[in-house]
Image 1 (tube, one colour):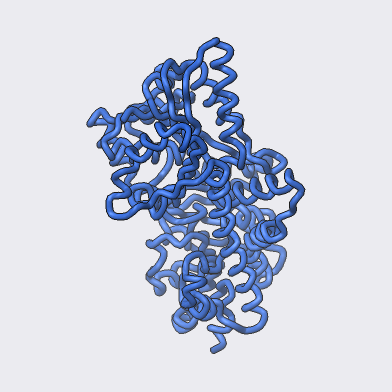
Image 2 (cartoon, rainbow, N blue to C red; image 1 turned 45 degrees about the vertical axis):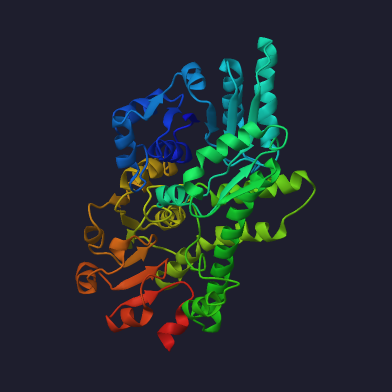
Length: 457
């Protein structure tokens, strides 16, 4: 099939590469010429395991190419995926200007029938507006060309996106024209046929339900995280071990084990943005989603929990204190720094006068860019952030280690070397990566999230 993917961000590039891997002829369009030049030179603008190799393999096979030519890209694809960014607007709503611009471009240049697929995460009702934007351009050209607008939300986890795309647990397709326009359903069945060979994974819905499903899924996962974080904070107060609680409730099949890990808050490009957008949609319909309001507030506070533990241990004035920080990305296997807890904790430590040596195995380049912006108004403060070449280098003379991202390389460090490198053997574990008893036996002063009882047992 000939496919155009509009947008070469996280969703667009993964979608384009994976569809090419399945044998389709894919053009990825972006108006950012610099990004297109990078991709055509074999450079990937973000880290995702396996993506670079997949892109290169399909470029060499001439099944995947990158272009900034809007007209040519519209002409190329019988299927047009819209996979552009939908960032948060100031009021919390999703900014759809790039989605609608893509729709208008399709309407301006299409000369034959197109299936237009919203892959971007968009509020309920967006497909109808996409249809109107396309139709307005056709009307302006005084032409009558058939097209379908479909909702096909993505469910990709950063760090495991290729696996999620190539082995999906479900494919949600919203298609209002299924009865009156069987063409779109037929084409999409063919497009996703390889994923349904073992058993049917496609869930056919109306368009609005498909759009809603994406937001509902992310809101549910964010809720589980914030719920466990609140329980962990209570566990610290009442003398319970949140890890024991997690095992206890996770064994209930009605609850399950996923997304029950307590920590220092969620970040990234999806959960924060999508929770805000869903709340905004509800407000437009006169409804206040009370649980999601609490989820947001709990996550905002959770990013400050480790800071409170550090202040409780060292005092509010951190002048002269030096900390090591392991992990900057919001989660492992990505270099994504968007709304990462590390940015909140770093800001607090620096504001209190501390210096911090930071290390992340993948996100150092992106961290330098992001933190340079974060501290643009305080260049002197920025100078107190040291970007270390290795995890052990970051520990040199540190008053404490702060662990924020559960990269595998941090799972089993040489604790004797840690003690040797550090000024004092104190660990603030924002991901409960280490066993408190093991740490105590090894001579460390240990602070986890909701694990006080384990130290006292």
